Each structure stands twice: as structure tokens, then as C-alpha cells.
Amino acid sequence: MMGVPDGSVPGLYLLAAVDIIDLLNNQPEYQDYALYASFYEIYCGKLYDLLNNREMLHCREDHKHQVNIVGLTEFQIDSVDGVMQVIGNGLTVRMSGVTGANADSSRSHAILQLTLKNRPDSKTIGKMSFIDLAGSERGADTVDNNKQTRGEGAEINKSLLALKECIRALDLEKKHTPFRGSKLTQVLKDSFTGNSKTTMIANVSPAASCCEHTLNTLRYADRVKELKKEMAGAK
Image (cartoon, rainbow, N blue to C red; front, side, top):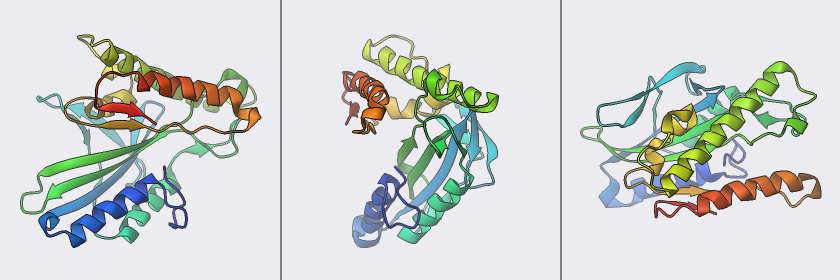
């Protein structure tokens, strides 16, 4: 998702931003649009602004049932270097740690938002959200970890389960979709409703030592792929 901050190995964040900036700078019909970036994480059920010293944020739903992140910092982006700087600054403060499975494991879900706005009135035209989900953790991977690490793993698993429950509810076309089951599903509500389009990319390993993790990831992605709604898919 993130690639290498210096741009030598671009991730999806940077690749998307390059295409958008190219359109804004070279296509006359997009001259009145401006690109803004924000970057935050969900850690242990709370939101933190990665572009403002990890200040705590609050998720609110307005009268139109639209989810808003109150106090989220936004920077106007005019160049690829600006995007790289935003990503690099955010990664330096994102929560990570050592687990039984990884020496440098993400302990949070990170969300980069690229918002396109109309220059004259700052009205939002569209938004792309890139969510780097923290990986689920088995109990066997946390036996040698401390209480904090085990708690982080439990919170990650809880939020991923809540996401799966929302996908199941959408698939069964239930009257109620439990988006408030976790902060992750709450902020992702607009990714699964309205005229949005959502893609899930599963990251797997060919190594035999990762076989169980790979199978669990493929099962999770397959569940998303079964979603009948046209706006969602898995790759």
C-alpha cells in the first residue's frame, strides 16, 4: 500500500496520487479542481491524526448520515513530492511494534484520504480512501508478547471481524448493517454505501511457513468477493 517513502518503490498511495496530479496539471477540464490529502490511523479503537502529532480525532455522523472525522488535518497537494512528504511524515508516527510473527508489525489501520475539491467554493467533488489494514493475529503469534501487544492484537481482530459482519449484512441485504460495531467499520461506511466503489487486495505469501496466514487471508477475501453488490469486489 505504502511502498518506500522515498519513492524508489511506489505503493498504491503514490501511484494514485501521481495519476490524479497528472490529470489536474495537464487536462484543461480539471483546472478548477484541487487535491487535498489527510492521513490518520485507528489504534485500539481510537482515531489519531498522523499529520498533527497523533492528535486524537472523533468520528461523528451528521443529519444526512454522512460520517465526518472531526478535526482531521488536510493539506493541499500540488506535486508528487508533496504526496511523498505527507506519506513519509505519517509513517514516522504510525504505531508499529514487534510481534511473534513480524519484527516490524503495523499495530493500527492506516487511512490515507485523497479528496478532490472545487477551487472556487471548496466543495468536495470526490474522495479516494486507501486503507492499510493491520493483519489479523493468531493466539500462537502472541504468546511471547506483553499485555499491551496482546491487547492490540485482540482489538485488530475485533475490528476485522466487525468488517466481515458488515459485509455479510450487506450481502444478505439486511435492514440493519452494524457499521457502529467498530471505529473501522464506522469510518468505512461511505465506502460500502451510495455510489461508491470498493476493492479489496489480499496480501499473501508463497512461503510454506505462512501457509495458515495465507489461507485465512484468502478465505477473508473470498467472503468479500461473494458480495453481490456491484460496488464491492476483491482481487
